[in-house]
Image 1 (cartoon, rainbow, N blue to C red):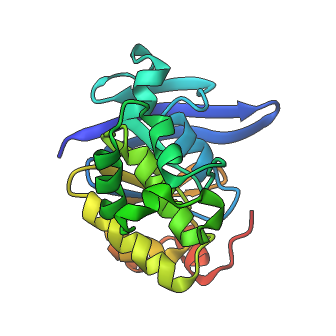
Image 2 (image 1 turned 180 degrees about the horizontal axis):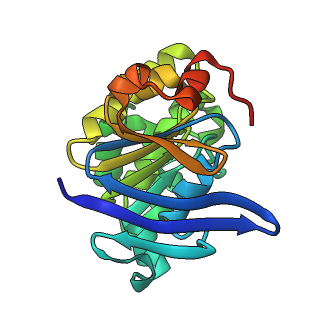
Length: 233
């Protein structure tokens, strides 16, 4: 199995606080889930992967080369990010999608809208008239417009109702055959549903790695407490 990211002995410090400590992690292609309670360092780890943050020490490889060998703009086109809450600009849906890819054609925008489960005529729809679920799909289409190899997903369904959660999960699952998804969640059931490889973070340390569908079978006190909902920040 080829690794798209390799993290070697990564530390992240904010002043006197160590947010990540001694992280060794291989992230393969496909779906990879970073799971753990709030405040465990999941988002920090995710943001390292497209240089939104830099490690205090250690090495990160992307496709076998140092992450810092890639110009930031080029890297972020290939390693796109979808945030917890959809962020759209004033204007039309088409304006929002073309912001990331200024040369994109209207036909390609319409194709992206269909890929994320929205009607083609939404290209002219105003962004401030969308539901949260629709806005998240537009954000996904905007990220896909740069034809990324990787999608970094920071709790992408946390602001959605249960029906929209299932819709987005199914949609992203379909993309995982072509694009690596690195998905952060604090929800055990979601991690298991996603049925990918994964790692559990707690207090900036990795406490478990494996297939998420086997998370419930893990005999580790920290993991068991997390599954029961007993872990605090």
